[in-house]
Length: 137
Image (cartoon, rainbow, N blue to C red; front, side, top):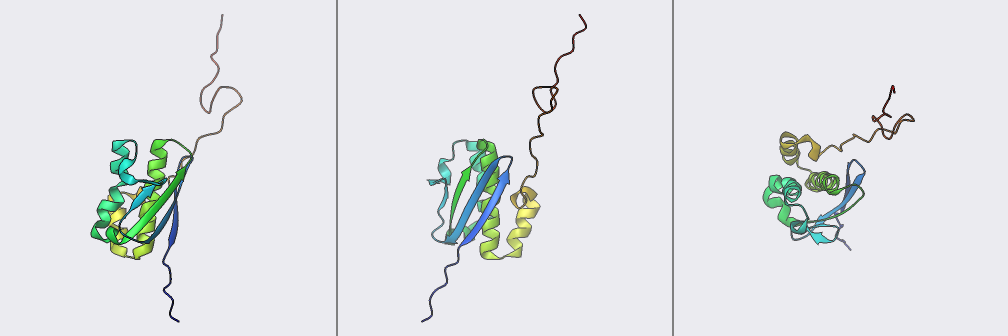
């Protein structure tokens, strides 16, 4: 009656208005973003950024699958949010302090959400800082 416990980890990452949710589970090393393999991410520079936690983790990554669903924001915000969710999932799945330390030394934003948000609009202008032009004639 010993039933295998499914080891599924749910993590999330945020950047600006983008929110990424990652599901990390035992598998064959497949990583998907919104149902497509990570290699098909639209912007090549951001694709490299997304692959950072995978490269740092090394060979261990071949034993897990990560499914990321991300929404909101732009492409860069989505890439950063996904990257954070992937890194958190890897750490939580393996519970390995050496991987966490490697992530922290490489880039702290792999583990910490970016808390910066847009400032609210003010009544005197068109945005948070922009003001109406003043004319003396």
